[in-house]
Image 1 (spheres, rainbow, N blue to C red):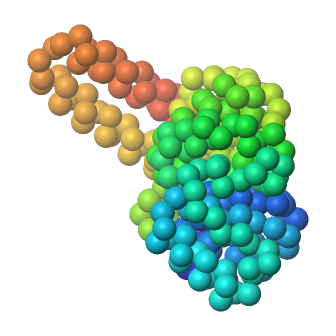
Image 2 (cartoon, rainbow, N blue to C red):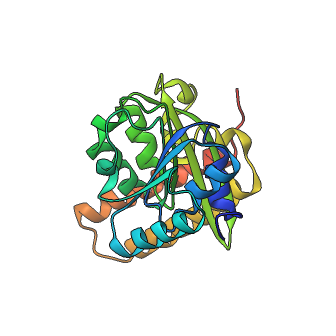
Length: 239
């Protein structure tokens, strides 16, 4: 992967960044995504934010080597603190856990007033982002799921709007598996949730053999509910 050819995961994120957007890429690592977008999608301005000094220096070197220092500002800082109010209209956050992405958005909510689109790629716990959208009046407008190097990733796109709109049928199931993804029912989707069900079943069986504390019983009930929702998702028919 480099600034000319992204991984399939980051290429999917890039596909959902609007042409001409003013971008902040949080956790930018090598700044591959903003460099690629500046070269191939005409974004006029980008911030590459990094919380760690080493990756920040790598990003600076890549931006300089590409001759994009006038377009991309590399900044060291935690989450959305690298952004000034009104500075960007699109934010990308990729390659983190969903709970961490949600906490970054929550801690920097005051920076989102001018932002029109969020493109988020959680490695796990996409449900944390879907819940954050609902609690903060962001509408989930699209989702993608893909497999790369044996790992399955989801990409969630949010815009300001009606947070309940995607969940017209089964909100609880939609939050877990994705309201758009369940309608597509692609092979990657099916593989993900069949694998998750097997993992949950193994955990349930292990809990069955343990002492039956109240916490244990509650955990087993949670697992059974997840298995039930995943089964419904895999047999879903849009009515």
